[in-house]
Length: 112
Length: 114
Image (cartoon, rainbow over all chains, first blue to last red; front, top):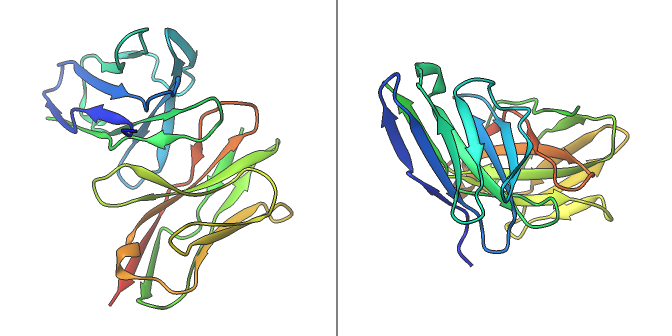
């Protein structure tokens, strides 16, 4: 059983461009979470999704950030018009029907 | 709302010495507790968890943690560390209401010195 997959592993964007991060959950997992890790900080929750539904987006910035988990395909975290402060590691986690989350390797976003 | 405090940001320790990484949490509801380990440039791996039952939980690589409800703590211990234990360790909590987000501490960087 493959683990949580994230791609790309590293992403460099210029200020103002769009960043698109992908997450494929573990087989059989229907819950996906996105977290952001800033330097010297722990992980901060951003959004929790199930297939075709956003369950909790209380940690998501109100502007420029969006997330989806379509019926088919990976979950996508989209950041529009990136700024330097968006530089961070973004981790995706998935879980089955009980609360035990498995993390992907992360996408390290650098905004230049 | 929950919060997690990891009291030590960095812990250096000599190889084969014991170590304790401290974690305290705050919550108005019952919680699940987790320790995750992150090796450089990698994702987080679940080290151990407390869901219910025995308050002492163990991992396969010699770590253990004890849930102390009265002190709201979940400290991580290992009696003898190895160089390969060098990593960042994160304590996390979630409430018991189904699938909920994890709340993480800021992490403790364990450095094992030969």
